[in-house]
Length: 136
Image (cartoon, rainbow, N blue to C red; front, top):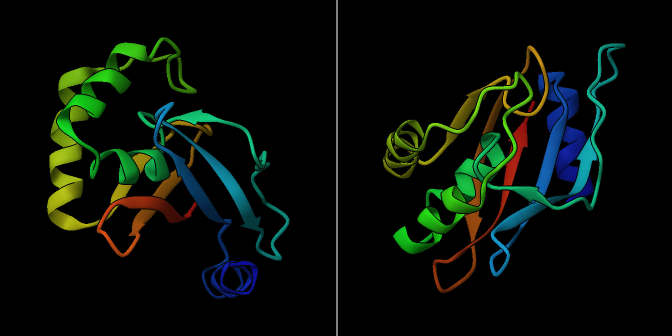
């Protein structure tokens, strides 16, 4: 994945992320990232479990999980986004429906202040989501 991430970051001058879904605990982690050559970069912590309800990558994955998994992710969320805003379950459900229809996720200031994230999920041969590729 690293050559693809490096090429994306160079082309779009954004930080690129390769995330992996951990379905049982309903979390994801960033396995790889690449930074653009510009001086403004985001600090990306690799291999740290994160909830699926915040951020473009998490929501891109959550949109393709079962309704029971979505409800469990909502019920288990206690932390607000980076701006201190609590999770709005109805906003999340509406956003997940849009992601499932459009195939990508777009978020603003969920995990990093003043940032925009965009991500697309990728799937295994059985059609289950296994990870996401994103830009921030």
